[in-house]
Amino acid sequence: MTTAPPRCSLVVPVYGNADTITDLVEAIAVLAVDAPGGLEAVFVIDGSPDDSEARLRSLLPSQSFPSAVLVHARNFGSFAAIRTGMAHARGDLIAVMAADLQEPPALIGEFLRVLDTGDADVVVGCRTGRADPASSRRAAETFWRIYRRFVQAEMPEGGIDVFACNRVARDTLLSMQESNSSLVGLLIWMGFTRVEVPYERLPRPSGESGWTFKKKVRYMSDSIFSFTDLPIRVLLLVGTLGSAITLLLSVVIAVAWAAGLVSVQGYTPLMLAVLFVGTLILAGLGVVGSYVWRTFENTKGRPLSIVRAVHTFNGPRS
Image 1 (cartoon, rainbow, N blue to C red):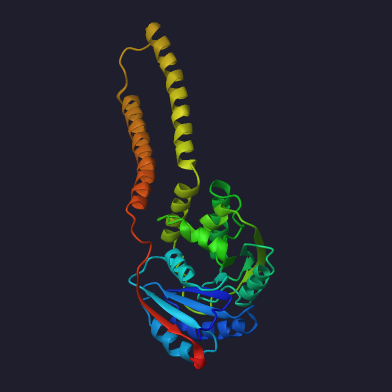
Image 2: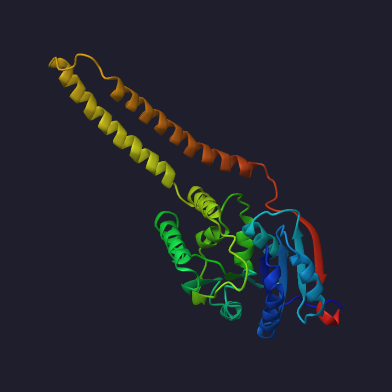
C-alpha cells in the first residue's frame, strides 16, 4: 500500500543558511503538527557554499514529517529554487518561506489555514514592520516605493518574501517558463483570489543578507522589462520633447540667419548637439537590446534550473 501524500507542502530555498538549519527544522516540525492534512518539507539547495545540505541530510531522517532535499547543479537564484521546490511538491496547498527565519514560521500555518477554507487561491505576507537597521529599512522602503510606482501597483508595500497558493495557482505559475523575470511579479500578474496577511519581520538570527545592491538593481531591471513598457515610454517622451526643442531651435536659428545675426557657427553648441543625440541613440539601442536579449533568452528553451540530486526522507516510520 502507498501512503497518500500530505495535503500541504512547504518549499524552502537554501543558500548559505547552515547556521539556521537546526532551528528551521525544529520550526517546521511544530508547523507539521497542526497543518491541515499533514505537511511535507521540500528543501532546495541552490548551490549553497556551506554545509547546509549535509546538515539537512543529518537532521531530516529523524523528523516526524516527510521531506526532500533537492540539490541544484549550481546557483540558479532563489526564484529558480522556489520553482524547483514547487514543481516537486505533492500537496494541494503549497507554501514558500525563506530559510533565514526572518519571517515568523507560524505565518505559514496561518497561510495554510486560509487556503484550506477555499476562500483564496493565493495568500501573501505583507510586512507591517521590519527589525532591520534603519539604513536597510529606508533602502527597502525606497526600493518598493519605486517598484509600486513604476512596475506593479498591486505589489504590497513591503514586497513579497513569503507566500502560499493552491495547486491550480501553482500549476499556472509554473506554466510560465520566463527566464530573467520575477516570480512574485508573475504571482501578482496572474490575479486569482488573493488574501494579504500582515506580519512583522523578525531580526536576522545570524549571517548577513544576500540581498545586495547589485541584486536589487538586477531584480528591478528584470521586473521593469518583464511587466511594463516604461523604458519605451520614457524614450518616446524624450524623443518627442527633443524633437519639439529641436524644431523650436531650428526656427530661432533660421530667423537669426535671415536677420544676418549668424556669422560663424560655434563649435561648442555643435559638439554638444552631436553628443546629446549620440547618447540618446545609444540609450535607445540599450533599451531595445534589453528587450531583444530577453526575447532571445526565452527562445533557447533551456531549463530554468538543473537538479543533480534528490534525497527523500519519510521520517522515523520509513
